[in-house]
Image (cartoon, rainbow, N blue to C red; front, side, top):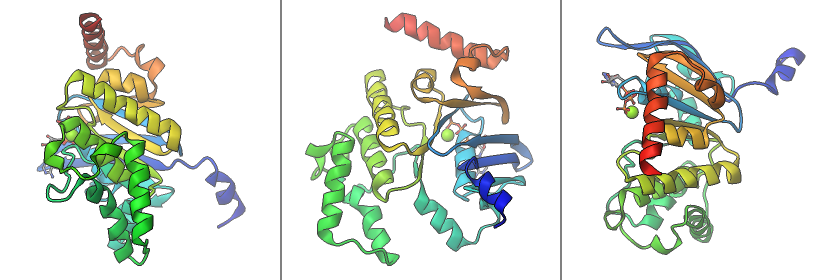
Length: 265
Ligand SMILES: Nc1ncnc2c1ncn2[C@@H]1O[C@H](COP(=O)(O)OP(=O)(O)OP(=O)(O)O)[C@@H](O)[C@H]1O
Ligand SMILES: [Mg+2]
């Protein structure tokens, strides 16, 4: 690596989309999507249902490939990686899936331990005491210390989300991707999950992307916002500047957020 590349490394984004296009059956879903996430930054991807938010996240982990354009993780082009290199990215960047997707037959503690045991199979062995200690630490971090021996079916959707977050943190990733962390839960639980993500942001300093259509959550968490409208980046910048956008869909989001604020106060 030359000197100029090394000095550019300091400011290199952790995740970067460069003119990404993606269609399914000739239906364009992502159209010229470009944005970047700095190391340690929390970027919120906002937009209506079906606009391509989950599709965006899947490109970062190489589950989907763009028709054209590039996606980089720490300067390495995900779109050009072998399965082995992708497996490495998926250890460094973990995702909390929209569905939560816990193993129903495993206890809460074993769900969280799962990525640690899986790591052992990749030759990064941890002894049982170390695994148990890490699970204790993670469950305390998400305020679930008392739930270690319970089954996922005993837990509310909100608590399951917290378990899924603990599991995503287990293998000490460098970045975490949250897909709709507050949907399908009541407003109070949504607030609890949002507060948890905020706490983890401050405690861990992890690079994060949060996908949501929840404006309240975006205001709480975002360093910067990517607002998708019909597959295009309609706005990319600090939350404070989003309020000044003239785009009608964005104004509708802001207005609806204000209405629900009045209703709840
Ligand atoms: N694997 C796929 N094959 C075909 N079409 C797909 C596939 N994945 C997503 N789509 C389509 O791409 C569009 C965007 O989907 P995506 O799941 O990214 O939406 P979203 O913004 O996450 O919405 P929501 O808020 O409802 O989760 C949708 O029209 C969806 O049907
Ligand atoms: Mg989605």
